[in-house]
Length: 339
Image 1 (cartoon, rainbow, N blue to C red):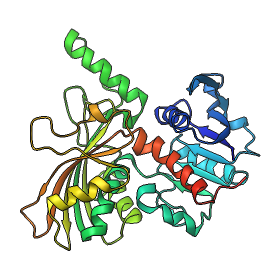
Image 2: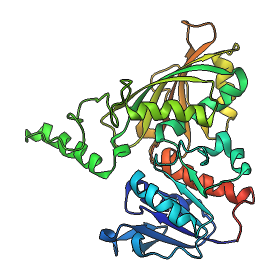
Image 3: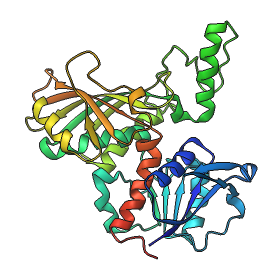
Image 4: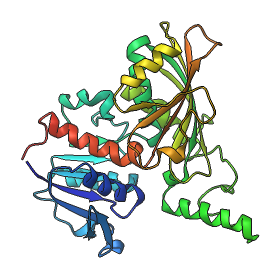
């Protein structure tokens, strides 16, 4: 049964990736419409072997559309999602606008797809923060086995998470270092080339940044409200791929060997964990891939039941576009999206 799909924010990094993933996975679409702001009207974006001409969100009639994938930022999502929901059964939004709304499910299909069976009151389904998505994919099977009490995570987040302008800034700054041009800083608070910046999103009164807060509360909403999470989020000079150093404390005993075996069988996970030079995954290898890669699985000797591990994923795919399309596939597979 084919569905009419609209992608809002189709000219952005994630919007383009959404179109790519829809084509790659042969999503059963009768029509795919690319939407963006009026200033992008007429722009061409790739879709499979062809191109789509971008239409203006402000003037588009959503009647007859079955599904909307949104990646246009929180402000646009807050304004437009309720309007679109009047005409469209489901909207899957990638922004932070609806994630903590009690009536909006926050979904990672490998972790909590069953939540969808309880209904989608507002017609809106939220995609989690990119760094949260890959983390909970790795945590879920371990939580089922030994019950997680506490997670300490430090992220190494690529510049693509901040958009195309941020990627361009890393490129320009890197070139400037080698040709001795003046160093221009626009997207970030400090130079990002050959540097790391322990600051993503705005600071809160607690001293945490909003990005860190998102990880903490989203893990609880998706996985278990009793899990205590503390995060430090860092921007690094990598174009695509978020990495995370994760330390986990469990209620029950679990060995590194057992964790390795569980994760090898877990949906969405791919374990690459050899105790040798190069026996682990880095962002270069994960770019363009769908899996959440897990390496460096080892016992944490500082607590009674603890593990440490390394988690890497393509933030534009599992952290955003792929997860959104997987949610859409769940709606079909669970017979929730009907003609």
